[in-house]
Image (tube, rainbow, N blue to C red; front, side, top):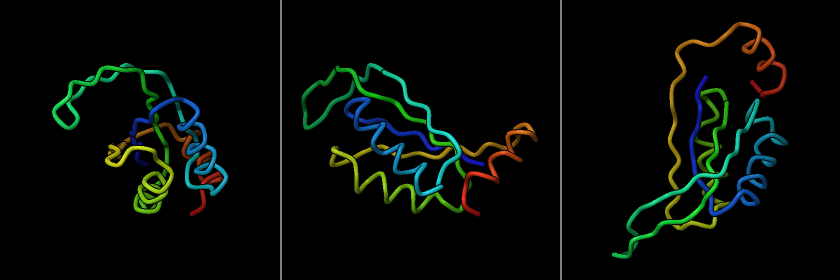
Length: 102
């Protein structure tokens, strides 16, 4: 299992992308929450609210999910990172195999 992390301009955009991922059976669950982000963009300091997203999925879906997020994201340079989960509970793993395409 991997968890993909990304941020979006707002929760509406994150919900839209999350629903696409779930409808395509690329994820077992999507978590979305408001976060405050600070960074420099084109020489200007940015400090604003965004939406963070965790996508729980199987490793072989990484490339397809990355592409889908890039196609549906409003940022020209979105962050899309993957975190390898070495261990997680058996009941979740068993349930996950019923909702994520293999």
